[in-house]
Length: 143
Image 1 (cartoon, rainbow, N blue to C red):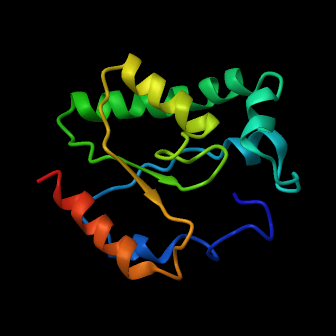
Image 2 (cartoon, one colour; image 1 turned 90 degrees about the horizontal axis):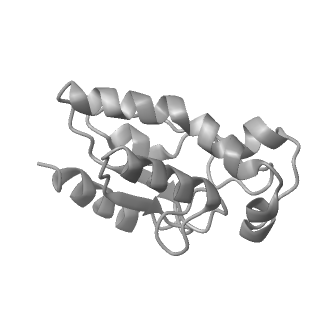
């Protein structure tokens, strides 16, 4: 859940509707909301990085999802990748991985999960066409 006033879309990003129905999504939990609540102030990467107990909290929060992904893969389900949010202090994947996503990536590596990455750009939804083209390529790259 994004800090009120900083959200880029009301509800889910519209591109979710373009994901083919045979592809399931596993949504990662929102560490900021669960740890600090809906009325938290906007914080920077450095502030989350320095927040006492936050790394351990994120690790604990991610354990069930990692177990789910490991089990899905063991059951033969193809894991296509992970979507992050560009410039998020927790959920960026590409420029400077966010605090939460860095922990997620480490746990994936520790558990033998290799997931391609794609980040929803800051310019989405204003520049939706470019991202949606990237998304289609991302989804096709798993074929």
